[in-house]
Image (cartoon, rainbow, N blue to C red; front, side):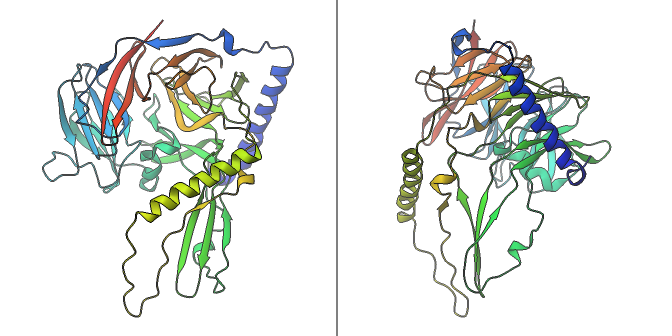
Length: 424
């Protein structure tokens, strides 16, 4: 199956399922209410030293209770023991490191593999580094399509995962059919607006067959690119959207793909045999955005960027005979391009735990205290519970028996990895 041949069919099927789910919810199926959902707290929290880490992207618990932490900010992989008190750096950017992390931060580069092993994306060599259950690098594995490693290692597209058959499932993005916008110059300097497609493919990479198939399509934010060109230069700017509306996804341990639909906050389930089903809408605290709210949000973004630009040094002088290059501009979407309600799901904040539950961080939640409140969704498509995290913590991974790992930011330059169990 390829994008070129199956895109329209998939989009029609998914729109039909969304309509069916809405009709079912309105035709007698009793809706779940927020009052029926228990809120769970966490038990004793075990924390690491805060001087070791800076920005945690993901973790991988090992069979012996230790954990590998992907510190994307410091560009290092750190191996902790089960008490989180002892550690060793197993990959770094320094020349003394036993393994190279790479020069770019890898937000999603630590991926669970088969039999308690893991792989790490090596962007420079275009390969996967295989890590055994003891945290040791053992071999190098070639991807089927090396050009997709950017999407695998970028957390904004969801977390890449291997299915039970050893095939990697991950999300990429589509490009406009006509991609001549970078080769065409307009001497008048008039800006050209390019809109990206509003859907994105979920792909499956088969290492044995050396194939990549499209298995689903989800809604993605419509990115707006502005290109300004002249005879001597060309600049492109991505218009920042502070409230992107997109579907999110996660791969369950049995190979089922769980898709969170942002339009009405319901789940679609794509089974390993290709069957797509839909469950009813889930309760969500919808918050409306007024015209004034939208304008204030855009004005705030522009003010923050202006303050940041004022602190930057001036650009270097242009060499003689070379055209001057303008400083990259900061652009936002127009206020009327923002949605009328806050999106239901935060981008890149959907995860599946080892028991097959889907953890979702909603964009708004009336029941949250000082920390983040996660919706935990079962296979029936209902929220079975909500889990309250302490202030300043973000979910970054799971262990067995309802164990979770959190990223605790203690200062702009120090973070800690924390482990706790959900109390029932």
